[in-house]
Length: 195
Image 1 (spheres, rainbow, N blue to C red):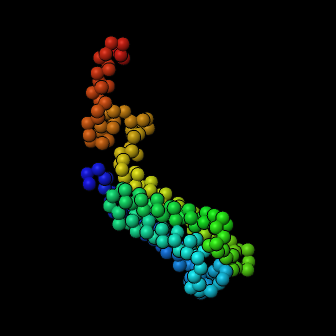
Image 2 (image 1 turned 120 degrees about the horizontal axis):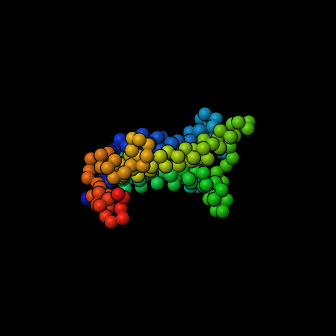
Image 3 (image 1 turned 90 degrees about the horizontal axis):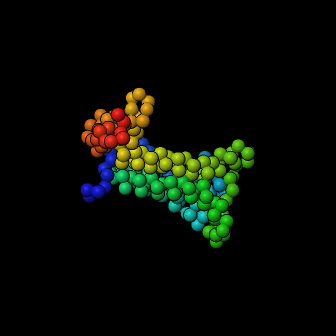
């Protein structure tokens, strides 16, 4: 695969592990949360519903799979695909409940079982919106790191004097001959050029 850029496995490892943990939390918390009085109705442990499958298990599994691909992927394509998959899972944690109102045959995810306003807010954030936002943010950071890995010199386009790097500065920073260095030298000799 000569056309696929390779990246260091460590580049996405932390983000990948974090996405695995967040996805596992999202997929498992509806089943184990009632043990800790942290639940959506019905507040019984290991209670399976079709709404839980579509709104919690599948997006959690997408985040876990995306995290695994990001952690073990050695190519930009594989790691970037994992980050995108995890971001889609996180987005579904955020948007799934409102979209579920269009498909009532899936069932309702329930309501927060907490009795105080603080508890209700924490359950909503930990089950859906807050969890989804953290997953999307982490996946976006990982995707950004994958794109930076494709262009390692992209961040070094400013010379040490604070001005945009010229051809000579880029040549010195990259260690490669600049294709425009010869052109810049020839324009000085051209009629009407600087002189």
